[in-house]
Every structure is written in structure tokens, then in C-alpha cells.
Length: 192
Image (cartoon, rainbow, N blue to C red; front, side):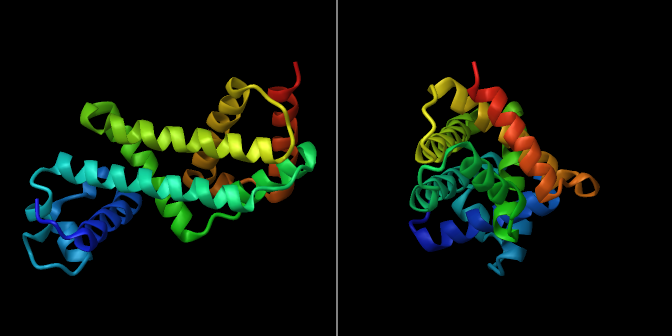
């Protein structure tokens, strides 16, 4: 594989964008070359197979997810209890910019592909662990003592909520509905 980290990042980022917009079925070496404005054959020089290209996208998505964890560490709420936590989670779920939406949709596509392609599993497990760590950082910074299993339960439920918000545009919950739902959810997850 050629040793050009900038080109590899461009290819992986372009693959992520294609996964989000067209799904895994639309991801080919040619589409990456065209979208990234690379000479034909460039992507296949870096990643010979479609699986290798998916692997590159998954590894890049994992790296981006860990960067997200670090941003969460820097911006997580100071101890404010459940109300502050619910408010922070509403912002995370409702205020999804285009870049975050793209990454989340691509992540979902990669997880579906990972069901059929076991070679993707290590990178997908890394993405999963980053999501779990983000949830732990958020809950702990809100001053809520909770066992790890409950925090991870919350993270899995939030993942489903993000999925709904991104994939069912006519069913998107308002901030008020999200606030109500998340407050109820926090009561369920963190009460015995």
C-alpha cells in the first residue's frame, strides 16, 4: 500500500461520505476516485479490494469517534444532576450538524456491513467502545454515580434514538419531546 497518509485520509473520508449518502452498495473504488477528484485507479492502488476500502472507512470512523470522545470530555456538563444530563443529551441528539449526521449514517452502514463481513469487526468494536466511553464521560461529568452496565445501557438506547432521528425524517422528535423522553429514560436507567 502506498505510504501517503493524507491521500489515505482523503480516500477514507470520501468513503464515509459515500456510505452516508448512497449506502454500502454505492461504495466502489471508482466512486471514491470520482468524488475525491483522484485519478482513476488511485483508490484501488491504496485499497485493492472493496473489503479493504470498507476496512479503511471503518478504521477512520473509529478514529473520528475517539476524537468525538475527547471533544465530549472537554465540553461535558459540570455536575448538574439528571436535569443537566438530559439537557446535554438533547443537544447531542437534536442538534446534529451535517458532518455528525454523515459520520453517524456511515457508522450505521458499516455496522450493517460488519454483520456480513467479519473482517470489519475489530474497527467496529473500536467504534462501539468509543461510544460507550463517551456515555461514561457524559454521565460521570454530570455527577451521576452509576454502574458501567447502566451507562452502557443508556448509550445503546441513545444509539437507537439517533438512528431514528436520522433515518425517519417525518418522525423526528422535537426538543421538548426529546427532553421528556430522555428524562423518563434517565429515571428508568438510573433508578433501581
